[in-house]
Amino acid sequence: MRHILVLRGGALGDFIVTLPALALLRACWPGARIELAGNATAAELGKLAGSLDVAHSQHEARWSALFSCTPLPHPFAAWLASFDLVVNYWPDNDGTIARHLPLRSGQLYLSGSALPSLAPAARHYCEPLHALGLTPSELRSRLPLSRSVSDLIAVHPGSGSPRKNWPLDRWCRLCERLHRRLLIVGGEADATAVEVLASFGEICLGRPLTEVAVRLASCRGFIGHDSGISHLAAAVDTPCLLLFGPTDPAMWAPPGDHVQVLRRGASLDDLSVDAVLESTNRHFFADQTGPA
Image (cartoon, rainbow, N blue to C red; front, top):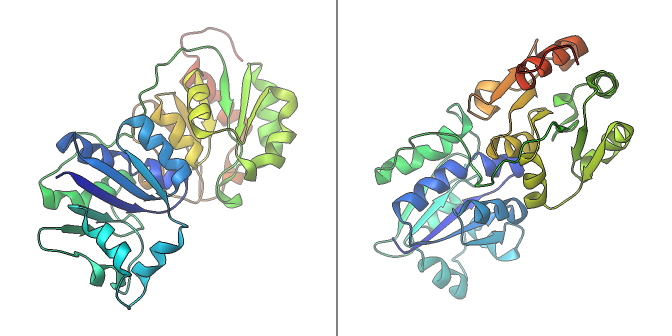
């Protein structure tokens, strides 16, 4: 297997839970050229992990041909035919993509649902690779960054959906009561929440993902929601306290003993500041005496 293409869309967390599948491909074929079409920004982390060689943006116009019933344009079809293996996680409910692939004798085409049905999500994305005889020894996503641990605590008050977010006023009360050095992390969509918390610590807003990963790797702990940034923190082995509400932690929490999930029900409104503070001290500062 010399040339592999993976089709995988979605946001940051969707990419990170696919890293174990990419790692399986790399471990089996270390010399292969592995390319991915999807979230090109998030896929830079795949290059950092050594699992990817090339990332293509899913927003390039050429990919629309795969969702058409008409024959693929010749130059595009010839390029796709150069791959020995194509693994598709893009939605294909009507089988349109599958009707185009494989493109030649000897080319292998595998597909899996875009939405996970096996928990944790990383297991779902490894499942199609069983057809190649590949089985993961673990389901943790890993980024090879050394940890230089400080007493800095990273907090991320956002996520991809407001219903997955703990109320902002409780974040404020938590930050006020922590009495710790804080790194307030967020993307562009989190700008308002990050600005509200700006007085409690250093801001890391809208920075490149590789830079955010390095910063998270230097933190003693991370507090966040069901979000891509939480998966990034877990992937660099930073101890994580994750506040879950309406989504299923069995599916979406990053695997690993360094990740603790705190959930009181389907709504994050049921989670108190006292409960989060107690879990923070127990998970990150069990080796220290005295309350935060």
